[in-house]
Length: 432
Ligand code: PMP
Image 1: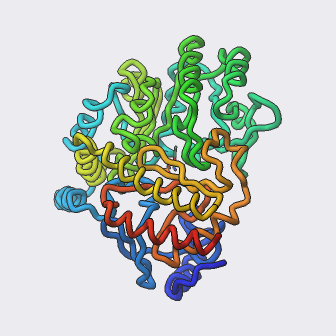
Image 2 (image 1 turned 90 degrees about the vertical axis):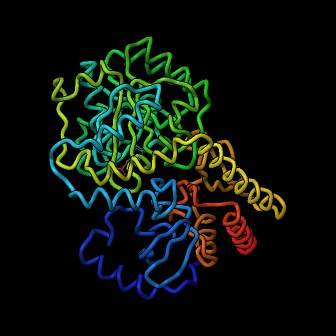
C-alpha cells in the first residue's frame, strides 16, 4: 500500500537527482527504499510543519533526524545565523563564538572538562576513537551490535558467530584487518561483557556505546548493565565512550550520562549541538583532552571546525534547552502523545506500541515494548511500511525507516499533538 499523496514534482526531482548522486541521495535512508515510492523532496519547514515540492503539508516527527529540538526555522536560531553570517561565514581563525558555545556546554555538564568541535557525528566518533587509542596505547575497540556510530571504517562491522567476536566488515571498502580491531558484543548481556573483558581488556582502548541505543529501534538498556560496563572499564583501565549524538541535549542537557548519572570517559555529540547546522563534538577530562593536537600527539583538525555560523546556531538553540523546565516539558508532551496512541492501539487490538524516552519515540510492532537487543527486532517491516504510508496520506511525516526513531520538538504543542494523535489513530484504524 503506497501513499496516495501527489508526488509529481518529487518524482521529477528524484529522476534528475539519480543522474547526479548514487541512489539520487546524499545519505542512504533518504531514498525511501524501505517504504516504497519516490522520496519526498522538501521545500520548506516552519515550526512543526514541512512542505514538499508538491505542496503537501506535513506535521514533521523526523525533525531532520533529531537536530531540530526547537522545530523548523526557529526565530532565535534564524536571527543568530543571520547575524553571524552578516559578519562573514568563515575565517579559518578562532572566533569568540566557539568559546561561547563551549562555555554554555561545559558549565552545564558534569562529565567533560574540555571539548573539540568538528563538523559531524561521524567525525566526532572517528576522532574520539583515535584519542582513546592514543591515550591508552591500545588498539582494539569494543562496540555493541545494534548501535550505530556513523560511517567510521572501524565502526562498519558486524558481529561474527558466537559472543565477543572479532568484527566482520559490513561495508565493502573496509579492510578486514581494520574490522578485526573491533570487537562486537550483543547489548545488555552482562555475562558476555564480563567474559569479553577477562579475555581482551588488555588490548581494548575504549568501549563505545549509545547509552540509549536509538538507531535500531529504541533498545533501552537496563541501568545495571550500564553500571557494570562502567565498573569493568574502571577496573581494567579501558575508556568508556558514550556516543550521545542522538541522546546528547535530547534526554536532558547532560544527555544519557546525566539521565543515568553514569560518568563516561569520553562523550561524542552531534545533531542538536549545531542547531540544524553541521556540528559535532567530542569531550573528556582535561587530562584526556590534553592528548589532542596541538597540546598532544593525537592529530585532529578541520578547515570548517568551529564555524562561526554553525556555532551561533548551536548557541541560540542550546540557550533555549538549558532553561529550567525545558526537558520536563518536552517529556511531558511526549508522554501525552505516546499514551494517547498506545491507548487507542490497545482499544482496537492493534499489536503495536510507541516506546519512548525523553522526547524520543519508536514505533514498535508486535507489541514488543522492552526489546533490549537488536537481534530481537522483528525484521519484517511490513507493518511499518503500511502505517508510514497511511500517515503520509493524513499529513504526518516520520522518518522513512522502521528502525529509526521519531522526535518531538518544542514546536509540537499539545494542540498540535492533539491533531497528530487523531490522524495517527485514524491511520491505525485503516491499516488494522
Ligand atoms: N553516532 C550516533 C549515535 C548517531 O546516531 C549518528 C547519526 N545518526 C552518528 C554517530 C553519525 O552522525 P552523522 O550522521 O552526523 O555523521
